[in-house]
Amino acid sequence: MFSVAQAVERCEYGVEEELTLEQTFDRLETAIERLEDEEISLEESFQIYQEGMKLIQACNSKIDKVEKEVLKISENGELAEF
Image (cartoon, rainbow, N blue to C red; front, side, top):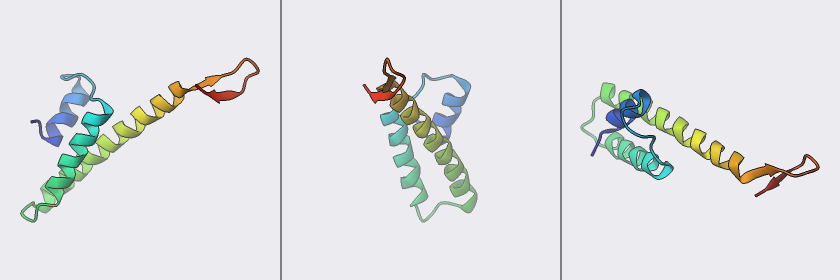
């Protein structure tokens, strides 16, 4: 299993195919579990936090894309759900 850092790095540099929304949520879950570890250093927790924020941005982008695909413009120019 990849760490959150590896997932973000691979996604940013195109080494890996784009993660699905479910995979991104799984990576966020992993980040949360790591942040809950009492043995984690401040530096590592900050790095994981930053990586988690990138994953959240990716989730938001994916959700926005899906929402736009679900909407269509009707013949009279109004937006309607698909």
